[in-house]
Image 1 (cartoon, rainbow, N blue to C red):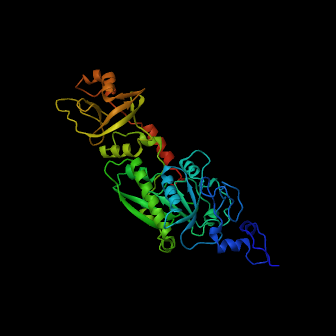
Image 2: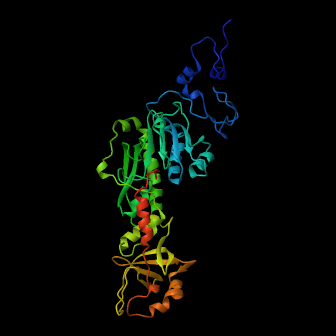
Image 3: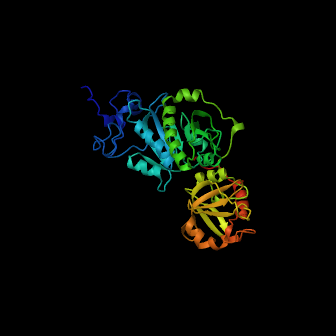
Length: 408
């Protein structure tokens, strides 16, 4: 009597009817046979066609166990923040697009509540908490976007196509964890995004697979630039994956002569040095860091925060005997602005914070009005801001030892 045909589940479980089609060969011949049904998807209540996994479950890893030489790819994504979410969104959408670039997608992130983990949970993507164990050859390519952890060489070598990194600068310029901030801080007018292959032990030094130039708009903040480059980087990543073998073949090494470093921003950067910084430099500093760290100065021995930057001010001191020195203040009633003298001119602020938020008018009327009645002679201490050089010196020593340990 001829043997009855075996069911898919029996074949997946390793049963045999005398044929040579072992489970691994069946998956090789029919890689689509094991489908990771997601919760809420059609047939979510059925078992997987071959693996027999229960209803509403997802596989721990992708099932195809051979190397692809073209899309769609089995992708393992490493990321944490909102910048990374933009790339993860496009990768996830690519699984269902007509020109499918991604076959399967899983996520590695940190254990705490981060945007990438939230997105993965909401979209039923398998999530693995860092640090990661042995992958056993289950993925074609890794993608790292703003992850913040150094990947060991053994892990990198488990990906046949390597691990790609989306970096928001035109490498080798601004290697390190804060390229967007340094782009704005240093007044760069041209930047871009890079897709590179990562190498072990060092950040942002691998070969470039793809780059796109972007012209920085006037008065752009770091937050605005970061959001723009996140979108452009995600699109560049998909384009790179679409032609990955060709990109790998034509990859180019970075030119070390053009390398600059972008260390993490710190609170020490927020101290204004009135004697040394120009109007343009203070403007760049505000647009780079003020959304996270308010600009600061010293007034009457106290720290004061300078908010709501008004840009360069045109100040006329005609008729006054007082010669302005860096840190001198002048209240501009017409624009309700507190103007402060710096190295090459005056910059204005609409709001300051001492014990509480004060408008420029309130600060002037409450603390400066009487002192400004004395128009002649050296300015009183009430009318001067001072630089915190002690803090700057300590920060300089600390920053010289800073290690680059993040991606964005």
